[in-house]
Amino acid sequence: MNRPKTTKLRNALLAVATILVILAAGARAQQKLGDLVTEGGFDWMIGRWAATTDQGDKIDIVYKWELDKHMISVHLKWPGYEHRGMIFYVPTEEKIVQIGLDNQGGSGKGTWDADGNKAVHKYEHTGADGQTNKMGMAHSKVDADTMKVEVYEVYSSGELSDYPSFTVEYKRQKKETDKTRDSSKRKQKVYYEPIKVQEFKVVR
Image (cartoon, rainbow, N blue to C red; front, side, top):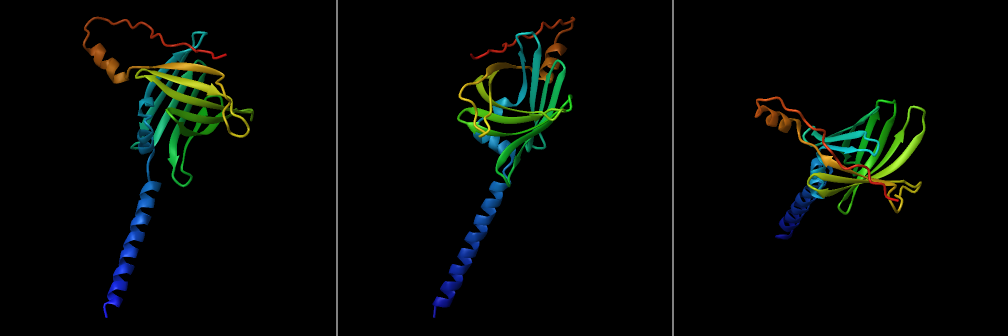
């Protein structure tokens, strides 16, 4: 006589379990970029960075959180060139992607992935003339104020070359608010000396 009740109870438990599985899958699918960056341990990349080429040209790059950490805006600039892009997570493809445009009519697209302690960006740039170039950039933390970027060739298979073509070291720059706070404490005129940062290091 108790079997019908037992069957109903079992069916109810199965239904609840199924709903929980669906909700859990939905929660994973809705995971935002900020969660993935934190889990991977790459929060340190957020901020303003600068490097200087052997020719004395300064390169500035800024990674900034946007839209409640659903997106990172990217602003890359050096003399004569400027690029703006956005990095975001595509749940349906389980990929972190980047798209962007530059001031020379070019566009770019790529993906980000983790390789140990390195954040690897595989990037494809198409110029205004239609010519396409591919490169891979592995970002790693040297210390709290230094970021190393190794630039690789990307083969047709999508794999990176065994050794980087060259390496760049960026130094973290002060936030604008920090500069304002520092200058407000001084009554006399302040003359800022240019910040010296690590130059390109070419790996041969």
